[in-house]
Image 1: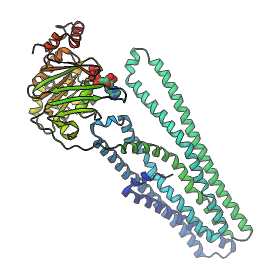
Image 2: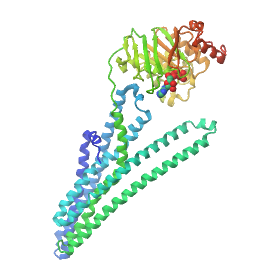
Image 3: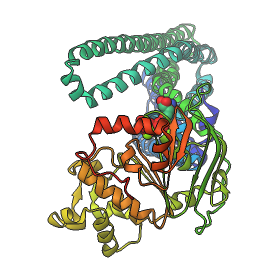
Image 4: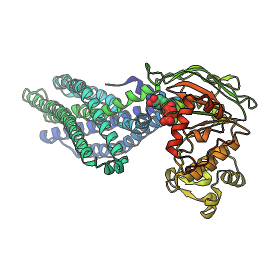
Length: 582
Ligand SMILES: Nc1ncnc2c1ncn2[C@@H]1O[C@H](COP(=O)(O)OP(=O)(O)OP(=O)(O)O)[C@@H](O)[C@H]1O
Ligand SMILES: [Mg+2]
């Protein structure tokens, strides 16, 4: 019923749990004192021995009980917040640090969506666990024992019977837990599936409309929603049933208390006051356990989420690397590189590639031949490859992630921009850079003219720069990459989504950059890579050939085949001028 590991995570926040239990306990003691005082008064009233002071005492006890209980309830609320707030922050920090440690290759091990779910929703679900369930757990053990002690003064028999009945509620909780665990995991599965599909359909709405597939998708979502409704109803039924069982035990117990009190009264073992006290306190006996039962259902959700959270936290940390690339030696040598995303499907088979400093090296080949996978390996996002990848003579695995990120710049076919100004987005490339440097980069990326007509560097961008055209977005990405000013640049289909004019201008810029950097150009458009110092041609994850454009054409192999096919398709001379003349 208690997850030790979660409790261990509480650290300093544990003190708030004790405080909550203490104030609840204090409130209960004052409540019991009030019952005793009123019971005593009742006894005296009926016996006719009541004096003014007795009334004053009972009134005083009742008033102070009301005041203390009110204060305790406020304090309980406050501590409950503090108990969960601290540990929530601590857990989020821990997950965050874990992700940082896992580094850029975290996607190899865990899905981004799951990471977000666990960090945001999962941790939030623990609020009830820490703030309500856990303190209630301890209090619901302490309260019956205390009341037992107090009731012993009045009637030992009643106290024993009530105490024996109390464990029936946790017994019921444990029984329910067994059923609930299975049901809840199924419930979460259906919930996540429905959410995933809903989001996917929403994002693909235009496509669904174009292909008139929205009606079909609607029907399938309805079926899914129906399945989710059924499982939700099952969960609710289970919860309501268990609440009913616990209510039966609680109220049955209180009724039993009343019956015992009356029979003790008849047997003359307790007086009027004692009878009143037993009846009133027997309800109190069960209330804490009953409340624990209702918190338990919410806490179960938190516990289910914590399983996923601990799975993330338990992932083994990669060995930290501290090596630094020699800035004067930034050539890259890839030898016998092998890699597969799945165990029995190798995507790269013994690849050997050399990227020289101040040269433009291109990797080309059909779609799916493994080009981007090589880029991901170089960027450190894939770590479990076989073979050797050396930058400036140093093995990739020995280079610290920070140094690698400083030394390499990657520009893909779509880049991400944050909501904010152009200046803020460019700062991501270089934190401390002045307006002059930014304009210089924008000038090189041929975006300066456009921005001057807008609000310059203060031009505001919405999320992912939605107001810019594909070409403008890509030019901005290039300006940001130029500001990063690293010795190695990797362009992976960086011009694939833009118009021929922009494409040619950007290609010019990339060729220019290669005069002073190590540049890797990944493209399936052979026209763009024709001017490269060396072209590596990939075919189904194997290196088919390599050399300069004219050599490969003359050779009449796979490259020249691809070239001819592309020429026919693209009708060269209309689409763009190409780079083969360099
Ligand atoms: N995350 C992934 N999980 C599993 N398989 C993947 C993943 N990414 C790529 N692959 C597979 O690896 C192979 C190589 O993919 P890669 O993206 O490297 O090809 P590419 O040459 O860059 O293709 P394109 O020209 O279309 O960009 C493909 O067969 C692809 O299905
Ligand atoms: Mg690719």
